[in-house]
Length: 231
Image 1 (cartoon, rainbow, N blue to C red):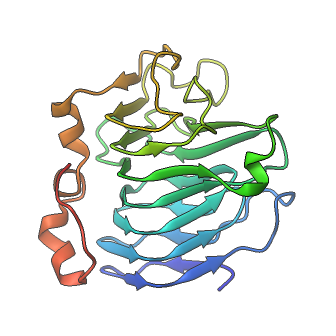
Image 2 (image 1 turned 180 degrees about the vertical axis):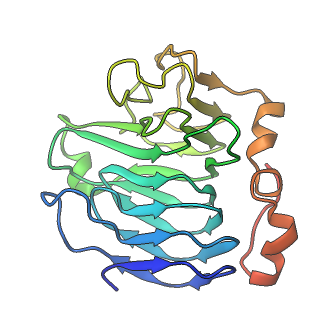
């Protein structure tokens, strides 16, 4: 499939590959746009360059999935949890990669993107190129919220970790968190010093688990997709 939109509540996708073949020079090229509440994807692959996976809105869960992209390749304003997934940064058209561009527009929205026990890695074409800087995310909207927890961050991740969108926009209102990550790109000493960036404590991390953040214990069992409720 080259592109797909998912809207039906309770959608479950298993073993699906969606590949947008627009290539690295064509700008935004969404592979999947998901606006389905209580949706789950298991062992799926989302492949593109810029804006690969549009986690548009509502509660979403991704388990054992692969996502490939360059700029803002997981974006949108869903409440989304990615567990045991592989995020592969590819060689971009320019010299910057950003894994996420989360679009939370109001501090009262219970949205954000949570990565738990994921791998952030470079494809072979990227790993051979030292001119590209890869960041965990940048704030698409004022209250952008992203956390990486107990994940393996590869050497591709720039020491600053996160990239601004434009000037000082959202740097005090976003929430970017890291908790108990591992790997050569996980060191937090060189991270951005923005007011909205946090090296999280355990009690903060608990807010972004499958059970807390998307109420997974209430609805994931009937999807048959495996999940770990906590950290």
